[in-house]
Length: 283
Image 1 (cartoon, rainbow, N blue to C red):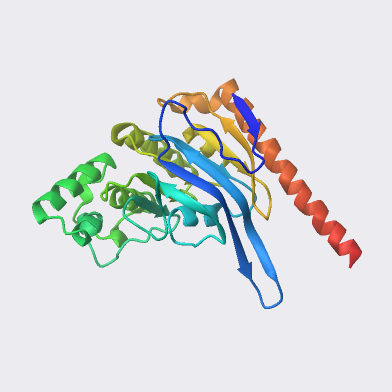
Image 2 (cartoon, helix red, strand yellow; image 1 turned 135 degrees about the vertical axis):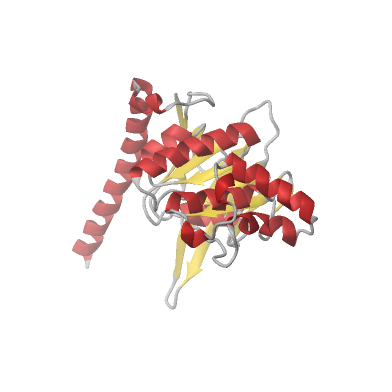
C-alpha cells in the first residue's frame, strides 16, 4: 500500500503505459449574484488503459464536477482534459457515462436501449443486434432483452445502463455513484459484476463513490479529495490485483486501507465543522 500527497500535480500512472486520460489542473468556479464560488481547484489526474480509479471525498467537494468535466458535460474555468492526447471540449461516445439515476428510455425495450448509441452512430442493424447481444450477455440480462425498464428491478436497470454505455465502445467509462441507490446486497453483486466486465472487456473506469468499502474493493487507486474547494489530497494504491473475491472484504489488508481512507476523509469532515463553528463565532 502506497500513499502520497498530491500538491496539485498529476497522480502517477503506470510508467510502462501511455496515459489514456490526462487532466491538467482543472478548476471550476460558479458565479452568484454577489461573488464567485470555487467548487473544484486545480485538480489533475493521469490514468493508463484498463485502470480503475475511484475518487472519494466529502459531500460537495467537486467529485461529480470533476467527472462531468472529463465527460465534456461541464466546461472547466481553468485547465484542460485530454483523452488519447486529444483535448476534450464536449461529450462524445469515447466517454461512456453511467449515473446514479438510470437514465434509460422508458419507451424502448432493454435491447433497443442498448442499441441506441450504435444506431445514432449509423451502425447497421445486424451489427447493432450483435453488439446488444454481447453486452446483455456480459451483464447477465440476455433473457430480459424484450422487457421495458419499468419491468426491471433497480439493479437490473443499472445493468442495462452499463451495457448501453459499453455498446459505444468507449475509451473510458465514467461512473458517477452508479450503485448509490441500490440496497447493500444488490450493490455488492453489482460491484462484482463491474469487476467481471472490466476483466472481460479490458475497460478503463473512473468511478465516483461515497462508499469507502466500495472504493477499496474495486480500485487500483483511490484519490481522496479535500472539502470545498475540492483538491486532490492523497492517492492510495490498492495492491490486490485484478481478481477479487468477496472474502477480500474481511482481510486485514482491506481493513488497513479502509481505515487509511476513512482517516483522511474524517480529517476533512472535522476541518469543515471547525470552520463552520469559527465562522459562526465571528458573525
